[in-house]
Length: 494
Image 1 (cartoon, rainbow, N blue to C red):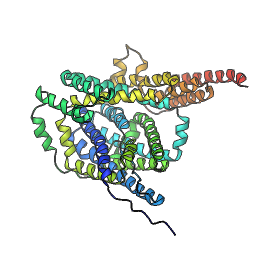
Image 2: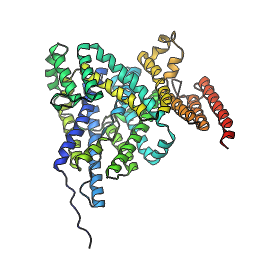
Image 3: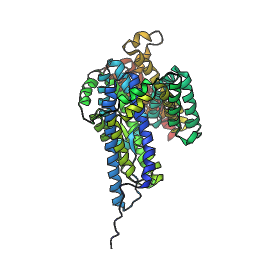
């Protein structure tokens, strides 16, 4: 006699705790996006009318899908304790898109609308890449050294996130240093905050109150906040298509940031799904990577510029005993909060000087993770992979006049900054291979770097044949050297 089918509930009390845990993470990302983009000079019409609605659509689509996927797994295994995967904007990837895509696009075009369209197209391409990676994701993870990939991301974190935001922190030192101290105590030293408030929330409350007390923020901010309340419809647009034309007609350098960070995102999804399997719920990794990619693409169709992913917080939701209800509620609440302008109102009230120290911590944690996630022998590879982004930071700050401005420092700054992410990953990969005495593998990475230089993906302002001949020859010389040592070691391995 067949066992009776168990009923998988739409919502249960444990979903409430899991919802608030996920809600706090996502609301922080939405507010940071709004404050940062406004600080960069993007108008409220783009931030609140396009970017946040697009992000909300992506969050809603992904959460609803994973709630359905959980129900499917529950029926298949006849269980009621299945937990839906947590889903939202990937925090590290969000910062890379903010400072590695949106900001350079704005500086290169000088136009916020064009920059937004370029970022939407980059986001759409990122989603398409992750959907494609779902087919070969494990192969990529196996062949691309983690130290190289995380080292490249850490370079972005050190310059554009932690470094840039530390500047912002010190612009109003009374507020910035106080909030930074709270962040160090609560998030670095893990000391509990008063009233058991989350550290980031406590820091925002204290910092915002201090800003109004010392006059850095006036009462007009409150009245301005209420002007953002309204109706922001979730409507598709053609920005992604127009942005593709802009990307491929002169801004292909932006894609050198998109590819590696998308690989990072796909591998993070893989790691988080595998962690969930260890906790008792087995989902298909390839399906999840495809869903994350499609969710990102759908968000881009509505004006969003940030890739989405499965969160590691899913394991926490599993420990809480959550089901699918928290995922359904999360998707619905974000759509509602975005459409009514609630997130816009919160972003208008909170000064940039309050958020900046939190972003310093985010950059710090990304750098620390790059080292912690690797064996100590790979630290030199991580460090080397970080360095190209110093050049990229300087280059993007001076825009088209960079060559003339930095010529007295070094003629290599501009060409090093062009395709910095590719250079970072390939140098890091070579170093990892050499550390492991895999000289032939190092030679392959050097040959790839030579090819990228030949076609202009690295060390050149645009794609062209024989775009950077000196660098092409330099990387070929590295490949030959690595092959020499490969043959030298061969007799000793017999």
